[in-house]
Image 1: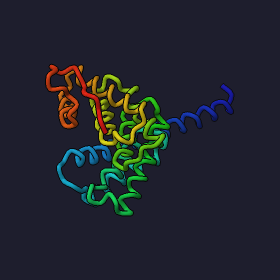
Image 2 (image 1 turned 60 degrees about the horizontal axis):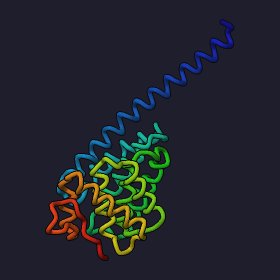
Image 3 (image 1 turned 60 degrees about the vertical axis):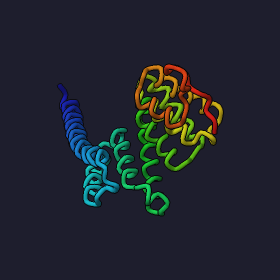
Image 4 (image 1 turned 45 degrees about the vertical axis):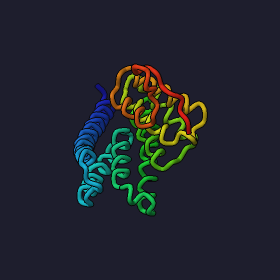
Length: 216
């Protein structure tokens, strides 16, 4: 083997080894950061303690520097910023900045992996929280519904988010929401039944396959 070729191969091998090490380290940081986010999101506390948030952010920021094209890291960062905002703080400038930062991370994540419905759901539900019914919201709702047609939790998100903003939805999104509700009821998904009962959509004299017309 010519010496020049051997040198090139050696450099390539070193580069690949360094890349593999960086990605492995990024995954360690991401898993630890995501663990903190998941643990806190499952508690009943209203606000993330600053030290928990800072630690999770440090892990995820380091992971994003090592693996800038990883959509999971961007999604976890979005969840982290969204999680910092409570309902009581929603109108404060810092809260609005946090929600906008979360939105940016969700956008980056779906751009990196556009066929993954769960991040589209996060993006859509954040738009619901901000009461932003626009083209981006419509796209996120459609992608959630069509990319996860058998995931009842995603259909529940489409139904719940859409019903909360029903009067402001265009006809095509209203039809999408009605279909999500009907899907959940037809499959006997209990949370969808609860949602339908909450919005008085279930006809009282039908065993469970009918959805009443939705009024604003």
